[in-house]
Image (cartoon, rainbow, N blue to C red):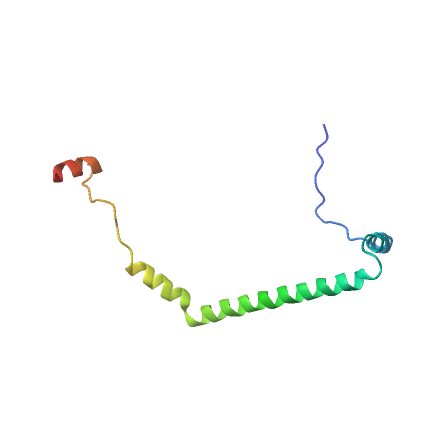
Length: 100
């Protein structure tokens, strides 16, 4: 039985394939809607790029201000141990019965 493996790279479409894709797009959307579709796609990509850049700058500002260090220091002080203290070999139920 032969095992098929996936190729390591995906071949890019050449000129004939791109022409066929363009022809199918014209048939599906019509010649008038393709420029509008391309424009809206470009605007959406631009908005995505702006949002990504905004998030990156905010993260960089947080790193520069030492925000991560402040969070780590605050978390160390706020730790509260809620487990009962037991001696070695003693279970929590034994400790509860002794205190009652």
